[in-house]
Image (cartoon, rainbow, N blue to C red; front, side, top):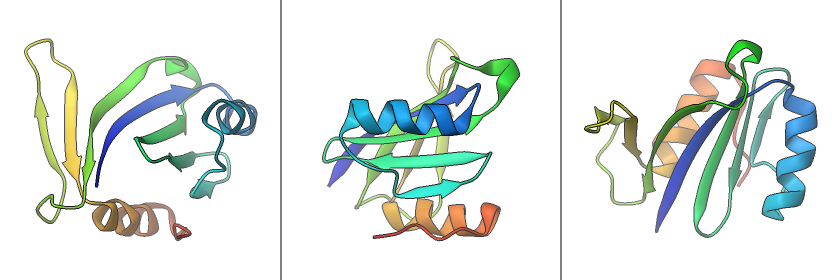
Length: 105
């Protein structure tokens, strides 16, 4: 499966989790209080990081792809936007590594 990935900076994680849960129709697959949340739908991998000075700004884009090679592949497009390619397993492991919080299935 291949999902489009969007990563945004938000001002307040808890308020944003409530808003995006309503908008996306799913609860987050992972939440790190005060820092990070990850949502997965059939089409979308959507993450938010609490970064008050950057609130509302795009952090990066990419694709979550079951067939992606191990690790994160990162490149910039012609406009300087960062694009990532990663597998769900790689992302889940990275969340656990960085935040110490497992992703629920």
